[in-house]
Image 1 (cartoon, rainbow, N blue to C red):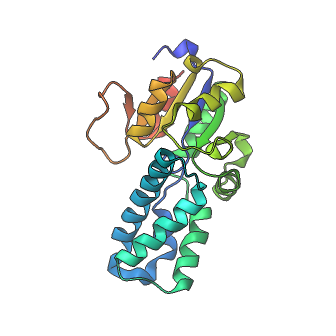
Image 2: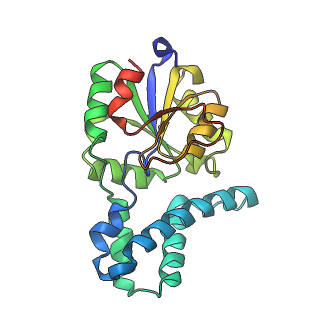
Length: 222
């Protein structure tokens, strides 16, 4: 990565800044031994639904995909009381930020980097998540796919960042915990950094810069 060229650090939201499994940990105790499996299926179906809808050109916003994915996961594992479903969805709106997020953002800000979020989430979802996680004071530009009515990894999504910030893709470092998301950003000309939180095997060519957390990002883009 040519560090001197990086002006802006753009972050994926769900799974990168916000722990998508914290909703079930916080509001899913009634699910018992099913909780972990439900959380994993909820997440995988949420992403699958975005890809399928994009390919079919049948857009429904990310919140709708989130609701549909949860309903599927609950059905697969025997269902749940509507009260539990509502509690899980409410918790998803206010997910926990990972512990490494705020320190990394502070260091990047102190080094003069501009900060932004580029997400499948709706504008309302992003605003709620940032405020609930105590990150609103960073003044990050929140960019949603909602206006495009197509999801990542469509190249038009990644072009949003440069267009909104008025800079070239080469001046942007894009961070995501999803390897496919980083691959999409890299293909669109951004500098991709894979935040490989779970130690997954390299994929999509393996050429992406990789970190185990956001802690090392300020040194990478100094």
